Length: 282
Image 1 (spheres, helix red, strand yellow):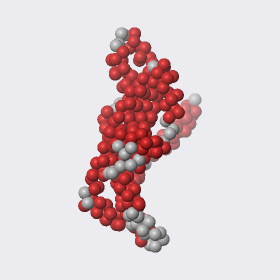
Image 2: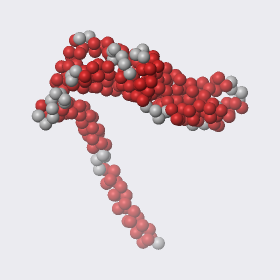
Image 3: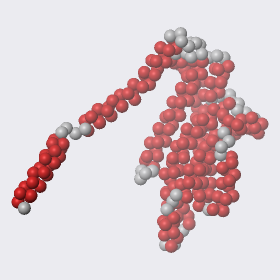
Image 4: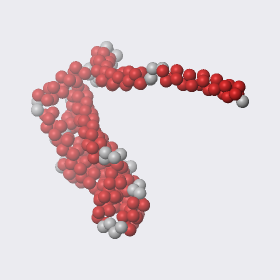
């Protein structure tokens, strides 16, 4: 028995030594830290490298420089656009359409999403209609919007609202349906008023879904801005892009596209930061 016990101890000793040796090895955290710093460096250098590559390709003669101008020409066109004073007016006009359409479409989407998610009768009445209309892209409405509203701002707001509404409605509808029904039953048993239950249980429970839908709608509002300003206007980033395209001013065209992308990116980042503070428990 003593010999068997000694054998067991001897068999376990190498395993313990191996574990100890493994623990003595340097951890992999410094390596992961280096990879993280490398990823940050690559992310910082990605845009400058892209701009340099774009400049080289454009000036190499591989492509037509008039149709694919280098970044230096695009930057010069944007600076001229700014000096003329039209740039800031165009950006302000586009931001007004995006902001107003986003707020109105989001408010309608949240309201009707709560109603269709909470009340089956309302869902049976409205959901089939919304599901049919939802796939229709806003740009398909441009001809009839011109007939309905002419060149007024109402038509442009209608198109942005159309693009925003269905995304927010669907996310709110799903969010309300995902709320724990046990919490709702418990609140009803405790005699919680309907209005208080709506605010403190249903709305808060669905809020993460609503925020996701709202963030998606921020980008969609800029997509629909293209259709809105193609419907006819006298100011706006997309309007200026169209005018520049007709005059073969490709530098200003690409500068307008870059400005539109940058503004959309900033709006998305700002909303993401706000969402992290608002829905902190996600």
